[in-house]
Image (cartoon, rainbow, N blue to C red; front, side, top):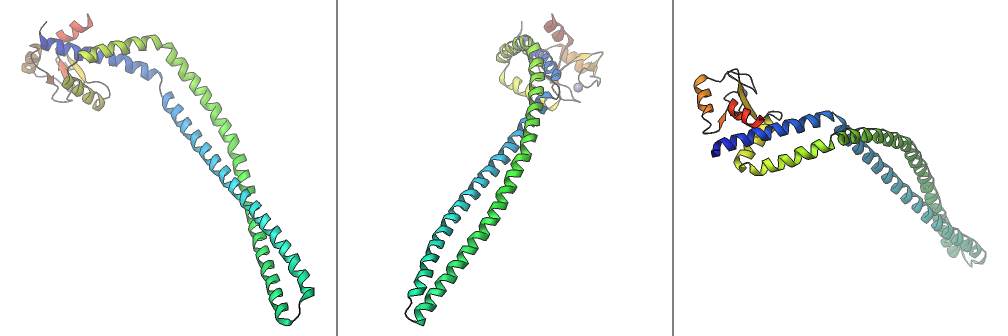
Length: 244
Ligand SMILES: [Zn+2]
């Protein structure tokens, strides 16, 4: 068989296989996207939960730290107050009361901060608690959708594997530039890169192919592209040869 006929035949075969693979893909419908969207949503919520947990932990640690600090101040306060009985003059008395006031202020500040931290921690705990049922619900939904998808995939597993291995062989036989052109047109034309001529029209876009052009295409001596849709046009003979 001459080389170009082979090239055209290979491209037509590739299209046939891809058509069948696309059909299998279509059977899955929106499920793969739905599964992915659910996974993303779940990841997002999990991230929120762990962020809130980390914040809560930080808040609890800060509170403990503050409490320890308050205990230290309390001990100092006790010491200062005891010293008040031993002062010898006004200057010493003033210095000591100033110290006591200052310690009091700091303790109040820490206690106020701890009240705010306790509120924050409570809010965070509530947030986490409200996210958990959402997460459980989404996980349940995901499980159902994944099972549906798995069932569809499994039903066509053998056929798909066979088609994929056939495709691999054909891809290896296809010339690199032909393959890139095929893939480029396939992406632009919703999967259909190769068309043939049916009742004098391009089978891809149904525009009439001029009879002179039809004759040229029938010679199978170069690649032709439909002048309307840009698809690779092969002669009906090539199509028949492939379908045999
Ligand atoms: Zn066309």
